[in-house]
Length: 274
Image 1 (cartoon, rainbow, N blue to C red):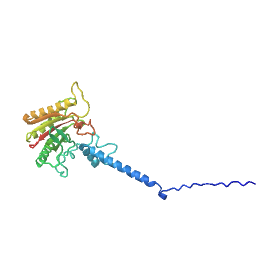
Image 2 (tube, rainbow, N blue to C red):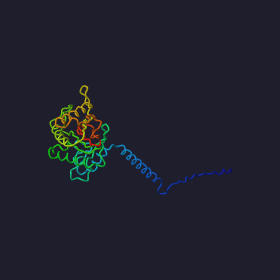
Image 3 (cartoon, rainbow, N blue to C red):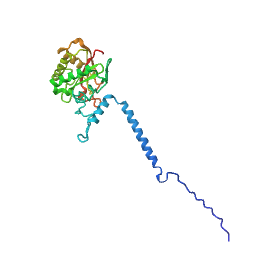
């Protein structure tokens, strides 16, 4: 009987290397950590690119917003939002904790830097308080349409549109009766304040084309109409340093370019150092 050759059986055993009971779960945790850090640095980078006006609006939103009072709407983009709340831009006389003249927008008019002063001159602060007091006494009903702040170069008075209350008829440079009343009050204050004056016109971003007229011409015409009202109310014409229109390039509410508050007239009283 023939003997069968012996068969050799080779068994391969795979030895798994790892962290025992932990396995590779640490890699998942590490990946989550790296992702979170990337998101954090991306957020820092995005914040560094945000303009000062948006930061101010965001600050107001997170300071004022309450989930128990509001839901489903944003305090930043809502047309009824009080970004132009007098307590924010026009602090009350008793609110010493706020910086007088907080501005929503930094801009330039020629060689004038329209940035809010970090160190406000006492003289300018007193001037702002005087104008606000005059507004409260004589036209308290439109206080939310008159913003007063201190900027580098002087004091700025902004007369803005609100929903249902406009300063100029739409598509026109003809001031409304309310605008004339406000400009008359502003003129009375300007006559008592020394310094040259700059008048600026601004529109929202809604496209306007009436023949050869665009938002550029419209904003300039409105600024010129405001200048005429000032002069008719006793402001010396020689004090007018410049009349300029900016169309929609310098928005007060950049998060909502068509917000009516972007339509405004800015009157800047230059200090003697400018």
